[in-house]
Image (cartoon, rainbow, N blue to C red):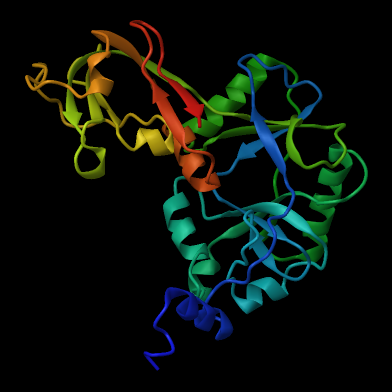
Length: 312
């Protein structure tokens, strides 16, 4: 048997033949959101919570990730979904994305654990009419189907930027990720569109760069982490090397000495200013990991300017 599996290609082909690999499928064409500008007027939009879940598309026969790979869902869960295409998020609750991600990516589904999650539906792929009418049909479909784990995402109307900010504050205070704004008069479309916006909080803090940690292994000669001290007492933050892959993320850690590292900094660190503004956007980093977006890079700006995230 080992002779038949000598090469990696043969091994993978054998796994596929016996059903140990997920079914390959073309990635579905989906609507993707743009980032909302600050102060956006919500008039004309339907507003909903942005769930920190795993996007899942139901084509009437199979449940798939946005990549097109099949999701190994329990048979009883799949059997209770309607025979119409749906687009939504598998959701386990606020702040439980990591647990959810591990659960839905198992090749052998845990039927008991799956009973805790919900399929939050927010779109009917390919359906006619504007989004307001589609949202109404989603609510009616879910109510008629009577499956407790199948739920329609609540869509509300807000009349002013102040009301939108108040709703955002409520959701974030309760542990939510942010809001989605979908034009009520938008026909169904795919791709990144101005018909759909995502709105998330942005936290800024001014900090003083006090040192660095050099990279190791394949990152030798690069900046691994920038050590900062926030203007708040007994606070610190850091810009990890993983920011070059996952977006900018500053995580609180134990306070360190304010004495800069004496060793000669790597080239990327020599240009660091004495102070900078550290943009905290951990939710963006998590979103980048979840959506497998293009790799992000950190641009070190002139003194007093915010760190910026750009895609390569």
